[in-house]
Figure: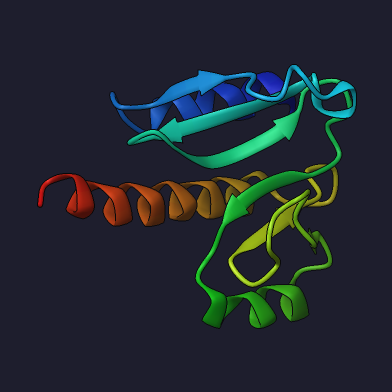
Length: 117
């Protein structure tokens, strides 16, 4: 999967998705494109160095994902307890889509319920 295909997929997940380049003040992260739902990031990657896609994940399935898929790595600048990195050059498109969709669902559900209270 390339940058444009992943961008299109992230945007296709829902009407509530916003994309931003939030880290412009940091030279090392100026090319990072992030996708948000309910004001919270669910996926991000560097468009200039497309080597890791970072997504939220359930802590209880992270060890299994790491064991089963060589393409799963540590996340870029996030807690490895709740986030994973995906090496897009090694990962099948179906796995990337599954993990991005899962991340979107985690964030959407977590912050939709908080916003509706």
